[in-house]
Image (cartoon, rainbow, N blue to C red; front, side, top):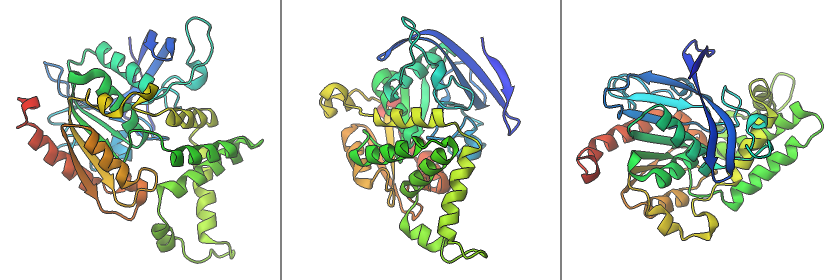
Length: 339
C-alpha cells in the first residue's frame, strides 16, 4: 500500500514499500521508496519513463530538470507516464541509511548501484509496470540505470545515459575520499559544507568560475571564495550528512564489471536501444569514458553536447538534451527492438 505526502512544490509525493528485498548485499528487511509521477499510465501499463536523479536531487524531476518533462517535451506527458523515485539512502522521503537493515541481523547495509537497481526493479514489478519504455539516469542516476539495463534486459526498451560512466574511476574515488575527509570534521555542518564545496569544483569548470566569479565583494572578500561558502551552507539546509556519506560510498561501489568479469561480456547483456550523452567539459566523467561506454553497448548512439558548464551541463543544457532524446525516440521506433 502506498501513502502520499506533499512536496514543497505541492506536487503529490507517493510512497511504496517493500519487505524482504533480495539484493546482492543480502536480504533487506524493509525499504520505502518516495516518488513523484507525471502523465498517465496507459491500459497496457507499458508507457513508463523512469528517471533516476543525481547525488543530492529529489523526486521533483520536473523542477530540477527543466525543459525535459511536459507536453511536447522529451518526456512527453501526453504520451508517457513519468516516474522519479528518491534513491534509498537519500533524505527526500525514501528509507534513510539508518533504516536500511539486513533481515538476519538488523545491521545497517551499504547499497551500491547494482543493489538499488535490484530494488527499483522490484518496485516497478510491484507497481505492475509491464515494461520501462524509457529509463533515464544522469550522473550517479546513470549508474543505477546501467545496472538495471544489465539486470532486466528485455524489460528496458530505451536507455538514456547522461553524463555518467560504467565505473567509479580512481579520479572519482579520490574526490569522494576528499569529501569524506571533510565530513569527518567535528562540526558536522561545516564538514558537509566543505564536502559540497569540494564537489562543486568537479561539477563546474575553471572557465565558468573565471567568467562568473571575478573580483571582490563590498567587504573586499573574494567572490569565488564567498560563492563556495554560500553553496556549501546552502546544501546543509536541505541535506543530511548521513545521506551524503551513504551516497559517496554508493558512488565508490559503481563498477559494471564487478567480480572482475569481462566488461564486454557484461555490457552484451544490454538489449535496450541506448543513447549516451556526453558533455565536452565534464571533469567528473570525461568524454573518453562516454565514448567507451558507447563502444561497449551494441545498440547505442553517442551524442556530444558542447558546453562550458562542466558536469552540471546536464542540468543546464536541457534544451539540447531534450532535442537529442526526442530525436532518439523517433529513430528507435524504426529499430528492430521497437517493432
